[in-house]
Image 1: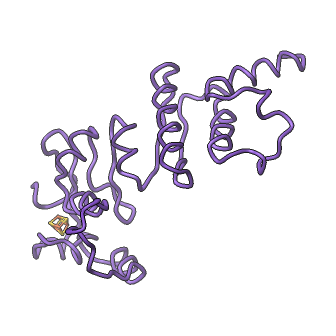
Image 2: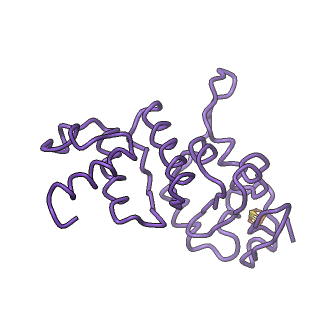
Length: 198
Ligand code: SF4
């Protein structure tokens, strides 16, 4: 890529991999791109160096549902065709389930459950993963949220807590949970950080 034409060809090829072309974006300011285009350009920039790993932190949180799926599909394509590994950081369990092979569920800096995504989200074992899955809104008027939680208070409490950081909210909390940090246990093909699986 010593010459500009060669550089343009390489950039165009990389943009093609994310469903764009150089002609579509060249000379345009970021505010002249749609949300989906801007995300794709950002991903193409990351791909230019041919990385084996891309850390994508909430890459689709600002996009609408259809664009979200197109970006997630693109991750899968890049993973299958170019063997790029994505570390996909998200609060969106639906796209995580769709796009990931393995998932690590985090609570206050701990990985509390980790394993194949079908197992962890299909049949969650850690009480926090269970509550996370139950928190997904459902289009059912009988399933309403009627409890209020002060997250600021919980966050401080949980980081400072002796023992399990989820003990204040866990419906299965035992005495040992308030005294000791739970180790990581292997259970049904995944890791669970919970005394219930000792
Ligand atoms: S270790 Fe105890 S408090 Fe923590 S998630 Fe398991 S049962 Fe609940």
